[in-house]
Amino acid sequence: MTKKNLLVLAFTALLLPTLASANGLSLNGLGTRAQGMGGAFVSIADDFSAVFWNPAGAAGFRQTTFGFYASDLMPRMTYSVESEGPDVNAKTKISHYLSFLAGYYKPVSDRLVLGIGIGTPSAQGVMWNGSDLTALSNGTAYDWSSRLYVFSFSPMAAVKISDAISFGAALNIHYGNIGFKMPYGMSYFPGSVQDPPQNVSVDLGQFEETANGWGVGATFGLLVKPMKRLALGLTVRTPLTIVFDGTASLSNMPFYGLPGSSALECRITWPLGIAGGVSFRPIDRLLLSADVLWTRWSKLYAVPLDFEDPVWADLCQLEGKPYPILDWRNTAQIRFGMEYRFNPSTAVRAGYSYDPAPGPDWALDVLKPTFTGDAFTVGLGKTFGGLQLDFGLEYFAGHKRARDMPIFVNYVMTMHAVVPSVSASYKF
Image (cartoon, rainbow, N blue to C red; front, side, top):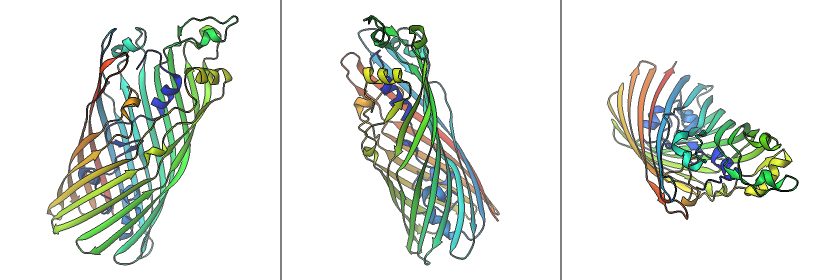
């Protein structure tokens, strides 16, 4: 990373924060029971989180069901650089990215169940101590942070086609909100618009941006139970594009007679995702499951964005490209889980998942970190009549990322995260 941070790359960092317990732009899952089983839940989907995992699972509900889930993603990262100038040894601040899911389902006949889910399929970001990164910002302790939240409203229907086959579908109405802060760095741009032009590099100061927007997609699910102890599941999430509108500001632009802010528009697409799973009961008390989630992240090759102010549009053209290149690649997550019931009211769970990073090494920086990693999960469930309580804990161990750069060498980033969660559901 050079001291001269390109504005376009800054926007890319904002729009694509990718952290632990996440697959590209999305969280790994919603629901404590599913979390405890490592996210291998596509072929199970028999609680209130079915709207997220596999809408077809709701077709088996015979009672009105309501549930609520909440979790706290707590990531910690380190970033170190040995350079010809001052070295960098930075750690992120303690931060909390809360997510939730509420689901309500009502059987309207023996074969049809209607429901709705409201939740946060994306809740992530990063927050650094600016004083740790002064070597990257001309000695000034600027703010460095990114945030992405997506809220989903998902009405759904599930149909039991036969005793062995169920189908479900959900309409996903997404509202997205993003926020971003970082130093812009040094630029010759103010001098280029002066008369006569001045070949002087100046610090444009603190960059900040907020934006929000809407998008619509769908989830389709299929659940097949060819025999009593075996189930197969398939979930397909269609591509979904959110059009973000917002404003950006640079603190030092007005000092040079230039506009300090501009309206902007950008489009971010959550690409096609296909998940398949299998679950099996070797004995009545033990449930085993495995899933694979394939996501077509290669479609997220670039991020189109436009500035309304012509001066900002010129700055974008001069300092970078109007369509920042990401070069993300398709990924396939692998998940395994187990649940053991000591009795009908008490269950323990454990799971593991492998999550490959979609971003290449050359695109890695402090505000858009993508890590390949291993997630280990445990969970506990307890039933009291119609009330179900679940507790889960995930630990994500990111693989160290390191590479040499022309100026900075021994560029190293590490990350881990803890994700506790709790769910409560009731059938009546």
